[in-house]
Amino acid sequence: AQSVTQPDIHITVSEGASLELRCNYSYGATPYLFWYVQSPGQGLQLLLKYFSGDTLVQGIKGFEAEFKRSQSSFNLRKPSVHWSDAAEYFCAVGFMEYGNKLVFGAGTILRVKS
Amino acid sequence: DTEVTQTPKHLVMGMTNKKSLKCEQHMGHRAMYWYKQKAKKPPELMFVYSYEKLSINESVPSRFSPECPNSSLLNLHLHALQPEDSALYLCASSQTYRDEAFFGQGTRLTVV
Image (cartoon, rainbow over the protein chains, first blue to last red):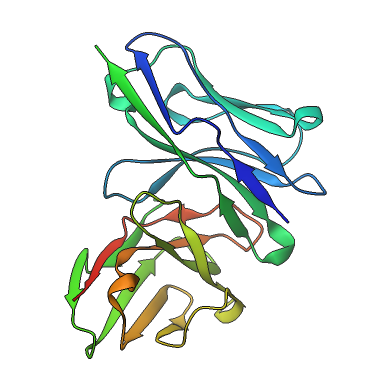
């Protein structure tokens, strides 16, 4: 069965520090991979996506992610965190042969301390 | 413009009420989705419409009834809901079912 694991429920980083959020997936083939961000009570905003090609993808707000097939991982990174980055981050896997069914990880809540 | 608009933003309904959630996009997307998100949980897919036809129903109870009247609109009709159906209902759309999905801000539903 397909699954997405985000091992960190909460992460706290200092403003200006670097950030890495982990995501691992379980699927027989190469899936489509996404990172979304959600502020409390709000919808989800797409940060970046990986479909194929270059395994290092750039997204909005200075975020990037790297697909590593050998580790079944798609970790999100940012070199310098801003207080406005505090939110919940969801990794998602898209199984397009099933009509863009997105399966989300449990989410990681990011807290930024000044 | 990557906007998906959902109305209402908040809804409180009784267990005997009938209500509808509405979702609209004007990006020319041909795939639209309903997701349900319980508190402190990730979103879970409910329905997928592709070219205005229902392509996925994730075994959702019949008290939730989706409708796609045209390529820009998606409704979710609610009837005889239970308190455990209280959640954030998210609509999303994508160019086709093989493209990334853009989400609306959601409708916060409370069933009393």
